[in-house]
Length: 126
Image (cartoon, rainbow, N blue to C red; front, side, top):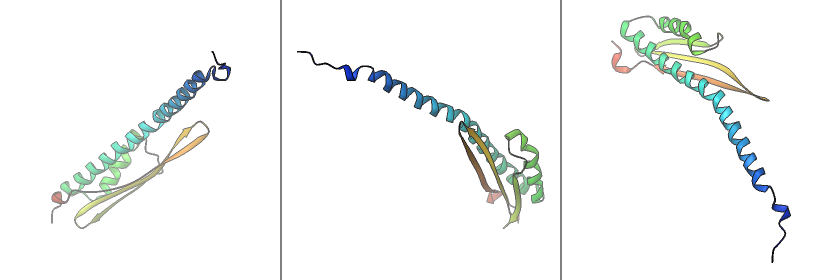
């Protein structure tokens, strides 16, 4: 005896298509997001470097801010980024804030970068 399975015909194809669409959307979102996140992480490392150099060389805190502003274009940091260098407890603190929009089809995600780095404590001279 054979049962009629006409309602099941093609269901595997539809499920496969749905999975492929979901995977493609995830891959495209990663394609747009990952470079922005990577550049932000690299810029945070640069912030730490300039904070350490500023304290070891005895430069004023504004020097770190100037160097970060010069490097902003290389890391795709927007021109309206807020860079606030300060000196606290014989250490240099640098805070950078900016919002970078990532445009997905039908949706714009605002990547918010708000990081503060402090120079390493053992580098500070008293």
